[in-house]
Amino acid sequence: MIRSITPSDTDALVQLAEATRLFKPIEIVALREVLDDYHAVNHADNHHAIAIEANDGIVGFAYYGPAPMTEGTWQLWWIAVRKDQQGRGVGGTLLRFVEDDIRERHKGRVLFIETGSLPHYELTRQFYRKHGYEQHALLKDFYGDGDSMVVFRKALMR
Image (cartoon, rainbow, N blue to C red; front, side):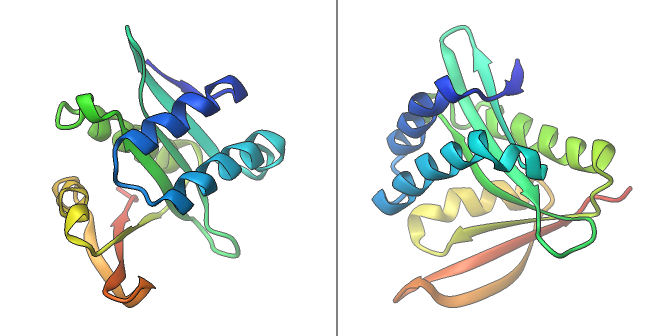
């Protein structure tokens, strides 16, 4: 079941993201701030935070919204799947939900996703390619020396 997140989900979402071992400590801190800001004000700015649940609780989540000062451009800022559920279609289900929501409800035309270039993000980059995203840009050394930003893009108009 996919549903909107609530403030009571914050601790579980932060723990889920941390347990993936894909996010830096500073990103985990930022996630808590992002979720707090979402509940305080950003939900009113058309930001969306969703979770996918199974019998044993939340197994993944996504956070997305429109890119400021654009027409129909959206960004997926966070997507994470519980470590023991990775490779089982949970991420794909979340990503399809996000794309369909942006396309159908919000008339979005394009979705951008950023990730890192370090080797431990290779499965993440493969995931985006598998779901029809093209690598659109590489910003060298963006996150740090040797850690570039990889930008993926997918047109959402049918």
